[in-house]
Each structure stands twice: as structure tokens, then as C-alpha cells.
Image 1 (cartoon, rainbow, N blue to C red):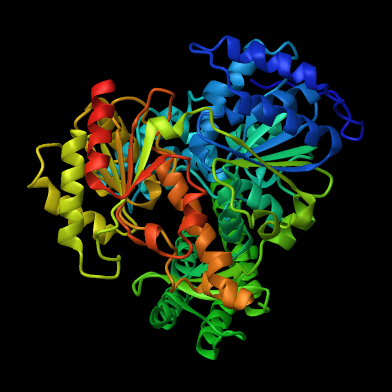
Image 2: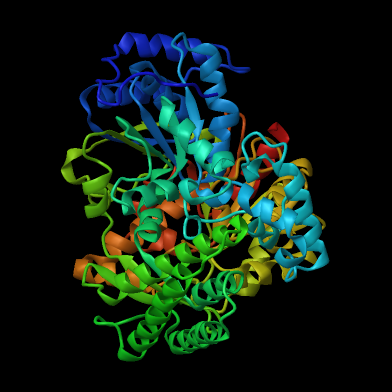
Length: 639
């Protein structure tokens, strides 16, 4: 998978790649696939990526479903010999590149290359934590129940034989609490140089492989941490490619920002307890955690003023002083026991990160938006950047060839991510014949979503699902709407209805795929990353246009920047992207056929309707339910 790189970091890397060379290599790679297809869009994209890499350009590519965009950007990047970072939206897509796309290219491209996968530290088992729970199990596991203890024991045995230490290597799903017992996050890890098990650290091994690889695959959250750290986390690279780039702004918003919750104080208290027997500090941390939770609770889902309100400042200041006292107490720990020293280092790291985040929050200026999220029981103070563009423009774009790609690209993306007018935007389309394969049905006779309409929506869904013989992915913009539909339709339809909250995502998708009559009801988390080609999916129902919630404090602040155009600049692009992603679940191969049903009459009646429709795949369109039902029946018969 990876190898060493003996070239100097200061030496020029890579070469100019010829268009014919890329086209020939692409043909060679795709000819070896089980069902090779002619994909002109893939060729067009690969040639555009080649140009961007050759000229250190900025390219944004909208590549519809079925284009084969991963191969289209990997082939020219590999042939160029330039060190490339591919940033994917999810760890699932990282694993896809690791298990499928990169091994394929490794086996078929004439040019040898090395590649590596790098994830955040908490994805790797920590051998120091394993050592502690193995050698001092009673103390380390005293707060865990029996089932969690069994999981931890199983994870400890696995850690001794794993090659990567990556949780994705497991063939079973550990509970979050069990995994956290044998792993550490970046907020807690003191680094390999200070860790007794640093020489056996899986995360550090992954970083070493990453530093030597020609192609490094990370997730966008990790790249966001790299940007937030001023470009200090990932190795130097010449090319950066963001896949599923429509998620870039939101992911960078979360990683550049700061999050403070009462749990930060209680986590520090637990780490401190393992090192220092100081009841006074313990009580203060717990008291200040409660005080912070109490003062944040009334502000949930609200934007805070700047400067931050005095009562919140007072709580944060008190917690900051206590974090400083914790650091002082930890510095005075004098122990020759390695296990105690490691726990001390981790507690120091937690206290330092907490102090730094409090400091950043207390000095926040108008380039950030402070607001409270979560629930009254678990309120969380967020400090989010109003605009991620400046951070990307400073730490991501300079010195790199840049490629952003997705099936759905908002027109406003270049400016929102700091590329301005420097980026070339192209649309390479899709190889699918959407006008023949799919129909977009808008239920114009239904009331608008703010009306009392549940019974009418459920009747509409029942008619459509019956015509499809099950085979339905029903997507909802709220859990309330999803749960109401599940309850109403399970008693009305003869088909199995799988519900999002009733099982793990992977299990639900497997059951849905295997049972052609099944339906899957889910919310926004299933708008993307669902790939069900074939007879198991003929109908996608979307309950309403997925506009963002109006009470989102960060988006409200961003709307204010645009004044009267706030809806056009902020809300509409997000709704279009989400709707297009959801509609894209239907046609995943050249033989798929079916209906996308949007149960929101605004899609056919509002002034912005054509802006949305023109951004969707070019499906046949109707507002006649009988026509949609006939199309469904035809699709099922032809399958």
C-alpha cells in the first residue's frame, strides 16, 4: 500500500502530463472493469483535472452520478507524480478508495505510486490505553458495566494483532464508550515523544506512512483541522482534491470553530482523578460544569451577542482559572511510574486545550458567531466562523493545484470557500439517460408543508408505495415527520418498513437491498451515501424541499450579511444541494428506472421553482399522480 520516498522535500516534484497520456491511461484502467462503459464525462473531467494540475490551477467540477469522478481525478494526479491529498467528505468514502479505487489503479497504471489513508487520532486504538486497561484492569474499568468490560477485553486482544489499529478494520461495531476506553482524541494525546507507547502508536505509524505517500487520502474534517492549525498537521503536498465538495463549507465551519460544553470540565475531572487525589479541584470542576450548563440552557438554539453576555463570561472565566490550577497541580506531580506519568500528560493536554478554547471564546470578534446548540440538559456553546473563505485562502489554496468536485455544486461555492473568481467551473454531466430512466413527480394538490397535512401526505405515500411494490426510500426533513409516517403506514401497507432509528445504518441498507419489497424511511443522514442500484429501489419520496431551519443562528448571521438577498444566497443553494443529493439516490446505473416524488407543491408554484428544477438531473416531469404511477409500474415490469 505504501512505500518510502527518498526524494528531498525541497526538490521539485512531478512533471507536466500530456492529455493523450491521460486519455490512454484512463481507457486502460476502465477497460479492465467488469462492465466497461463509454463515459465521455469522465474523460472530459480527467483532461480538465490534468490542466489544473499542470498549471497549479483551481478547478470546480460538477460530475453527475455515474461519471466515475474518483478515477477521473486520481489518474492525472498519479501520472503527474505530484504529491496529492484527496480529502473525502466521509470516512466511508475513504475506505472505498482504500479498498477499491486505489488498488485498482495500483494494479493497472504503468506508473508505480505509493498511497496511504490517514484518519483522525481517535480512529486508531491507543496502545498506551490498552496497556493501562490490561495491566490495571480493575482501576481502569471500574466505571464500566460488564458488557462494556467484555468489549474492552475484546478490543485489547484485537489490538495485539491488528495491522492498522483502525476501528474500520473491525468486523463488529464496538460501543462508543468501549472504544473511547482504548482510544484517545487529539485533545487528550500528549504526542509520541511524551508517550511510553509512542513507538507502537498506530496513529503515528499512519502519519509516517502519510508523509511518504504519493497519494494521501484524508477526510475533510481532518483537512479542516489542518487548516485550523495553520497548515501544520498534514505533510507538504502539491495537489489538493476535495471530493463531495458541497460539504466543504459546513465541515470547515465546525473544525475552525470552538465548542465548549459542560462535559469538557467533567472529562477533565475524570482524567484528573486518575492522577491527583484533590477533592477540592474535583468539586470545582463539577460545580463549574453545572454552572456552565445552567447558564447556557436558556439560550439553546439562540445566537449570542458580542461581546458574550456577562453571566456566560463569568462562568467561562471561573472555569479558565480552574483549568489553570489543574495545570499547576499536574506540573507538581512527581512519579516514577510510567502509567501515572502518561495519565498526567493526557490530563495536561485536556486542561491546555480547554484553557485555549476558553481564551479563544473570550476574545471572539465580529468574524465569529457565538451561539448555543444541543438541548437544555446538554447545552453547548459554539463559536463558528462567519466565513471560512479567508482561512482556506490562507492555508489551503496557496501553493497547490486545487480540484473540487461533487455531483452537486452550488453556483456560489467559489466565493464561499475563498476561491473567488480564480476558479474554473465545469459541468461534465452524467452518462445516464435521465429523461428515459426517471420521472420527477411534484404533488401540487397537497397543502404547503406549514399546513396540517399529515393524513394527506400519508395517503399520497401509500398510493405511490403500493404502485412501486415497496422498493421505496422515503426521506424526511424531520424525525417527527418520519416517525409519524412510519406509524401511519406500517398498518396500511403490506411491505416491510425499515426505520432509521431502529437499527445501524449499514444493517438497514443491507436489509433494504436484500428485500425487494422493503421500504426504508430516514432523515437527512440518508440524503447522501446511499447506493442501491437495481430492483430494490424504484421510488424516492422527499417529504418537502429541504430548506435549512430559519432558527439556525449561524445561517441567520450569514443571511444578515446579504441583506434582502439572504434567502437567495444562503437558503436556496443549501436546499438545492440537499434536494439534488436526495434525488440522486434513485438512478445509480444505466438500467435503473423509477420516480422521484416531491410532496411539496412549492416546487411547482414558487418563483424560485426553476432554479431548483434546473439543478436537478434532467428527469421527465409531471404533476399528475396517475402518470407517475404508470411510470412506476412500467419501471417495475421492465426491471
